[in-house]
Image (cartoon, rainbow, N blue to C red):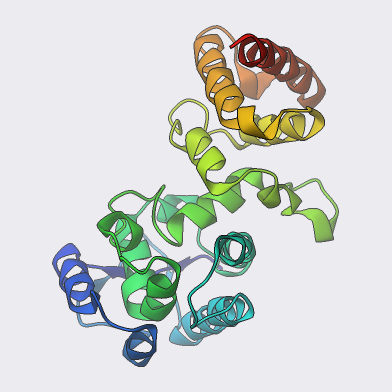
Length: 253
């Protein structure tokens, strides 16, 4: 069954964020809740998500945070591991569908009502984009759901369905998803990019330059090629050629 997730009115979300600034993770843990007076739901048909399911989701995300050092301050490696594990949890277990996942109000509810402590642990400054859902590509949880959704390998082995999550770092994946109207909106294309990326021998200090140049080339080709209509093996071959061009540019720089 598809459930409708609670959403938080923008004014209430802004108020909670301002209240939570400079608060400790331990304090925000006590403020966690499964409901809020300023909650609303999408006007489409569907059953509202039971609170017990919301509670189970909090428990799973919190357990993951604890595994990666919560409530102590995390390092870069711990943060990256948390992101990968939570992306899997959110996409596999939450029941959120793409039509709901675009709603910043939904993610605001999760970050400020259900999981304020985990939000503050992951991003202590509680920047607006990280918790209000004003930019889902930067939201503490929204960006992870979309990352998993775009990289989920529905044809893979069960234990490897989310293996591609660890291929690209957050900043590299952000370059792809930021172009979601042309590149980042196509799971078929994104998965192919990651597949080909794994086969290339790219110097670590040139990865960002190569990826940026590659994406610019793909954007230009997108006007002439329907990437979504290409079989996987043909698409991989096409993208590998583009990557080779970008590698040549980086080598000559």
